[in-house]
Image 1 (cartoon, helix red, strand yellow):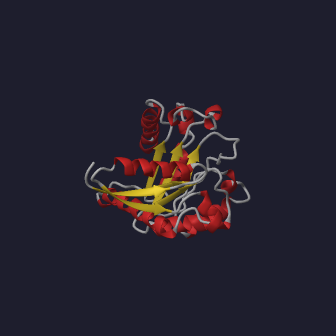
Image 2 (tube, one colour; image 1 turned 60 degrees about the vertical axis):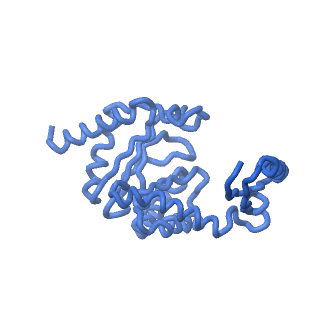
Image 3 (cartoon, one colour; image 1 turned 90 degrees about the vertical axis):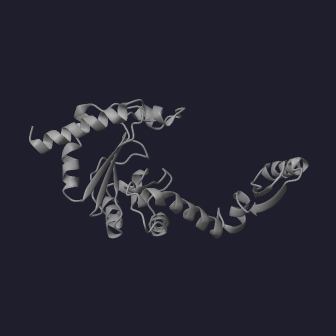
Length: 246
């Protein structure tokens, strides 16, 4: 082996330090004429217990910068509609989490940020006005959803525009058994072929949204086989019939 290499070292937790230490011994044994610049990263649960942070500030800044750099070619070519932040089920409504949403938007000043929730607390009846008002005040598009109901991760199929330029809707399917299953692939979880009647429920909602914003983006996330593309064509036909009065 020849040449110079920069190697990141993350010792981690549990057996991590022992395993990484042995790995470095192997690297040294086989390096031959090569040289290694080892860069230690202080990451993991041990750091969290010591500092209360999962990542050092400089690492967080670098991650965000690389994310922006990766997006910029699409943005510059006019091919990036928005950056959709789908927050996880444990991301419940709170001041802390609202602040993090603001942080995400602030870290991507050149991009359109849209927000999708996966915990019912954000859109429960008592919180709907607060949540939509929060997004509206910050000009952040709320991602409307069609999904199975009855779970902590379920949000009602409310059509709401919280920005003037963009509204977004995602169709996730309506199979309650698959929604929280441990499927081997994502496509199995979203294996749902919408009927034309189910798609038709959204036609008046989409018409209302399109009258409030410059663009309305509809995303079919039922990504099993051709279900998504087929349902997209069917929904487009329903919308076309509406516009022609058929």
